[in-house]
Length: 151
Image (cartoon, rainbow, N blue to C red; front, side, top):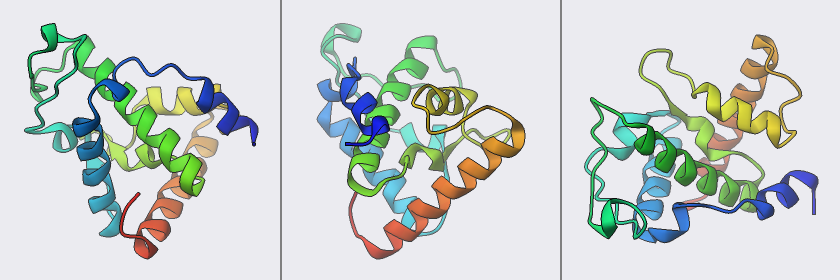
């Protein structure tokens, strides 16, 4: 087992595993965009998903307001994206959440790159290093999804 995979196996997912339906929808939406050789914004990714996480909102379904993201919204989505990337890395060797971008810069959040650094897949957060890593992850995802129907 490589060291990145070992680190991913150690992660305790706080919310992602509590809502399999939403997690699968997140995966489906990213995969759909990847098969079209595209990227997806955070807002488009979560739009109209009814999250049902027992430890959030007293277990009642909720939606993320894409015009007014709360700290909890960002944390829940981060957990779901991390889990989804751990699955794509285990299965295909790339971090699928590299395809999820913010609307302003059309790039992943700095949280994504910090997490990659923590996993030791990104040696530093120098702009050139980050761009090269991101381009490689996007390319790997597009190629893989071009050949495979599902994550």
